[in-house]
Length: 79
Figure 1 (tube, rainbow, N blue to C red):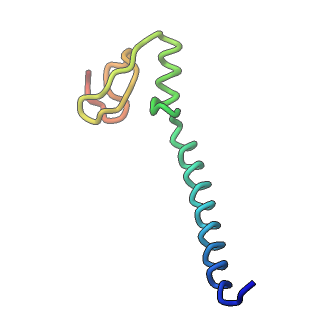
Figure 2 (figure 1 turned 60 degrees about the vertical axis):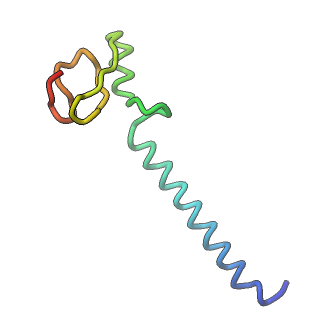
């Protein structure tokens, strides 16, 4: 092993550790947002399964919510 390459190896090791840490943080944040891979929240999916309802979008904030609700749960805009 050449001594000239030691700083390069150290830099690559630090870079690898940072990338792994960012990947773990990203996975944790994705799990906390409570969304599936298709972007529909699990609360909306549960409402669809329970009511057989459809998903509607808010005119003001574009939040998805169950059609059985009369106003947006995010901003309160009526349907």
